[in-house]
Length: 383
Image 1 (cartoon, rainbow, N blue to C red):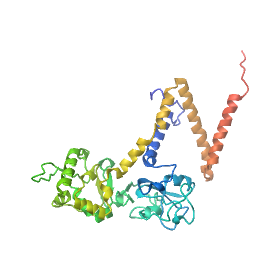
Image 2: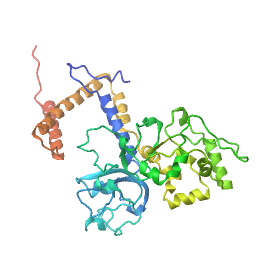
Image 3: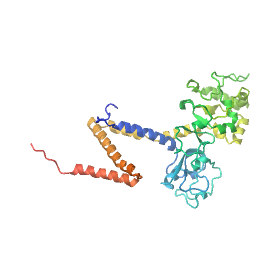
């Protein structure tokens, strides 16, 4: 298929094929679906209460007196054209749009809101600041290329170099991160982060199963989770109220002054005895034992909700064409790319902002030129 849709030949210039365009658009579409797919872009989420996880934004234009967050639909309807801070996702949050924090500006989608949402939690992200360095992102004064990583507890975003580690593990080797400050506040978590290459076991007379509590930065081989062992240990803990955490703390625990990187499935290994459950509640950490709370699960729900992608639709359309039609489409796209590049170059040279009406004017001009070519006088050929 891809060979029959290869880019047309050109005179030394890079020509982007329709396949390249569809693939690039597919990547962007998948990323957007992951972040926004499980959030409602038509209706304010306020009536749903404190949503377990949703995409949120903070509006710098409205400049609320204190920190405030708005849902995706309100971002599009009530704050269109405003300067917004994209907060990615936050847990257990109720939309603030139009409440008392916005100085009398009512929400267009759901105006009848309470003055405040007492259970909402805010951090510096709502003012456009991130990390322990308290800087914006992107930061125009920061010339160091660095990855931004979200802590699963405080939900702030951190530069990789500010997590207290000498070097970052590969993205494939961990699923979630807890920042250094949250690890210090909840240092019991270090007991679940065993620095060992071999699998250690906890053996009691009544427990004959092996419990692998994982590693801080595991290899691919160590990334395999034994679900049966997890379920057995959790079930046993629930039945006899023995505490896995107490057993783990009897071993040598390496407490660091850094963040911790956790592999997929680490939450399943947290003890669920009555004492630990009470501790989670006291520390407002109950979400840690809820697998649906993870960003990964949120993103997967977003992907599952979306229908076929533009890439799939584009490939279906191209595959239904014959070779001549495919080449005509590719030529047409490259003509569009060339004309649009020349058109936008003028704005860049003059330092002008491209507005919606400018783009509409460009396509109107293209359509007019197309009609002129197709409706012009008939050409007669003399023999």
